[in-house]
Image (cartoon, rainbow, N blue to C red):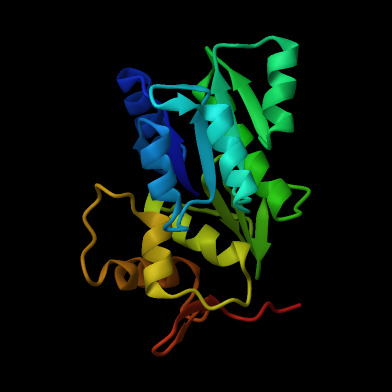
Length: 221
């Protein structure tokens, strides 16, 4: 999941970047509302982790503005304010979830996965396709009862495809899903990951649609 972190505390922002990456996310971070507005224009993010207290404005006001503009991206609020009426205000402003500081990184990651699961209408976090079970919480795959190991980028790419079975995802969209602003992308990176996934899952598991992108092979019932 590509996540935008909006947090002005340098130490916490860097910690969130490192921690979420270890949990399989692809995070980018900004320190205020103005930069967050610019970042969301690209449409590459699937969720926002938003601090309420920011140097250039209120996170709640920012949330209200993006909702009024029609942006329905899931937003999880972070704040040191944990009174009930403050949580209610944040949720009524359009937040999808609310996490008071201090918090455990594992809980933040779990809440982000839950947000994505609800958005896609899934009752369980485990994704299934053609005999493969993909568990984002553990970053683990099972195929035919056998555990299959994936790198972080392989797992994220496969998750992107399974979340939209039948859809053709372009190389550019997969690069946006996998890589943050500060990560270098080689020209054949996606092709390399696809090749490795085919070695692990079978040559026919992922189809190449020439000139368009990639999709999962039709599910065998």
